[in-house]
Every structure is written in C-alpha cells, then in structure tokens.
Image 1 (cartoon, one colour):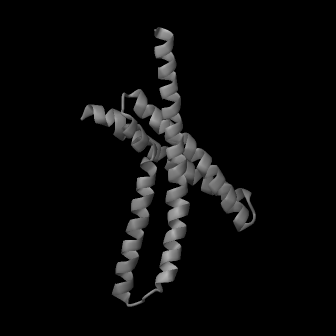
Image 2 (cartoon, helix red, strand yellow):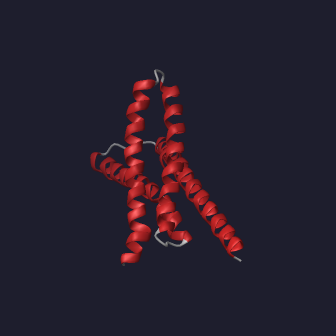
Image 3 (cartoon, helix red, strand yellow):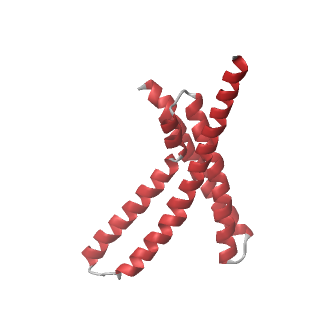
Length: 153
C-alpha cells in the first residue's frame, strides 16, 4: 500500500491540487486582462492547456521517480480530469433529478449541446494536454535510460 501511495496517489493528488490552483488563478487573471468574452476565453484555454501540459508532466515525473509503472505515471498525469469528469457527471445527474421534481423539462438538444461543450472544454482538451505532458516525460525518461544503458556497456 505504501508503494502505491508514493507512486500513484501522492503524484495524482498533487497534480489535481496544482491543476485546480492554476485554473483558479488563470480564471481570475484572464477575467481581469481581456476585455471581450471571446478573447478572454481564447486566452484562458490557451494558457490552461500550457499549464496542463506542465502539470501532467510533473505528475508523471513524480510517479516515475517514485518507481511507478508507465500506467501509474500516466494515470497520475491525467488525475485532474477525473475530478472534472465526475463533477460534470454529478451536475448532469442532479439537473435531471431536479427537472423531474419541479416538472420543468428541457429540450434534449440544449442538454446535448451543453454536455458536448462542457465535455470538450473542461474534460477533453485539458485531459489531452495532461496526457501529452505525461507521455512527453515517459518518452524523455525512456530515452535517458536507453542512453545510460548504452553508455554503461
């Protein structure tokens, strides 16, 4: 259990915490910098993808450094997306229950559009950036190990 804690859970939660802190900081900074809504959103998502790339790489590096497998390192790098996924899923579930309780039915096309937009903006794009960061670290670490074994021969 101690091995899994150091290889998976600590890097994963550190990645989640850093991602959340950077997300809140970027949202506040982007809203104070850009004047138009479209420019603000482009600025926000571009910076968020860059931060997610770094944070995903950090999570994978910490997991690999603790002796974690490639799967554990990649899982630690994409850990923040799981929180966003469950948050969106819980939000949709609660909305469906509340709609039935109050009798206010919403057209499915509106719900599907909102789910698609939220899924792409808050789950797919950051998840891809986190995964690319984790894969980049795995690639660099595997090259480093290969060069060490060639140099040591």
